Amino acid sequence: MAALDTNVLIRFLVQDDAAQSTAARKLIRKRVNEAQTLFVAVTVSLELEWVLRSNFKFEKQAVVQTRSDLLSSAELSFESESTLELALLQHAKTLADSSDCLHAALATAANSGPLWTLDKAAAKVDGARLLTASP
Image 1 (cartoon, rainbow, N blue to C red):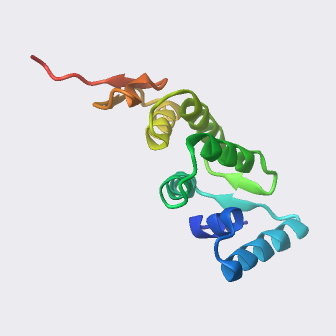
Image 2: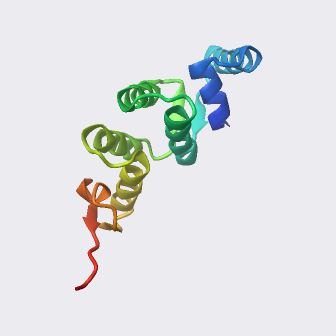
């Protein structure tokens, strides 16, 4: 099973560079036609969210929908897929950053919770707890 880098997924989704977008589409189409899935690492998923939001100014709902669509794709195999799905659900319903939601979900999946944080928004994610300074 071959793996995809963030930039290939970005070109496939955003199609902002004609030559690179065409190359990404051809690669993905070829693998699909050969009935081969493509692997997406957790780090690629995390970077994808950041690039869509910061470089391409996707609104949160568009990022959530795009990532949800990718997770639903039979052509892609995600590392820790159920954990990514949990993190995405948390991101959709809280003000916490996507990365904080993923950190908490990964900690929970590893039976290493709670995730202690100083970030008040992140502390509202299931599996996270706010660390407060002693008076």
